[in-house]
Length: 212
Image 1: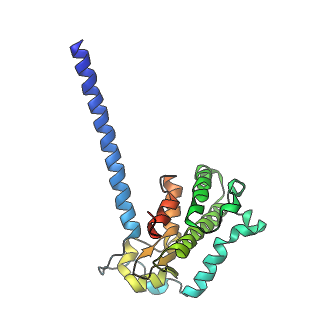
Image 2: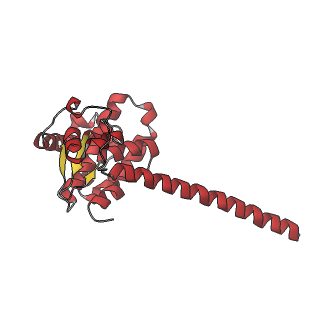
Image 3: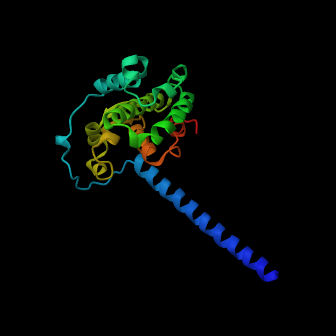
């Protein structure tokens, strides 16, 4: 009986150790990825794409574009472009940090159906939710964020950033803070589509709004 008991204890310890290892590995991997997403590196390295090949967009024009995109849910025509829009309680969307509870709840259905929707609908949906999350941060953060384009970001923070943040949908639109920090809401939304609800959008916004 003692042998069976000892064997059971050893087996439990082995299983617990494996689960702990997997949890720690997942936690460290996530921290590393978050560090990449939110880090602005200063070393000068050779970029693969020349900055002058990237389109120029003024911060003022981009601010208007993001405002229009984030308010897309206000018209029925644009609502048709957003995946599973019928699952959203529109009365909750007031650009407050708490409104992201509704966005996170809805995003679960988008994530679950991503393999069954066409690419245009997915792109329109991610454009809206990325701009909405970004506007929530811009309106509620004490860091006085403003929208900038990728080229302005590279010119301000260095070409070396192109090595870890290549010009793409995830980094095309960026929030630049008053104290030289940058936030990437579109990258966070894209990560949500890869990883699911663990990429909580409200928590992401709370970090930048000083509420975490």
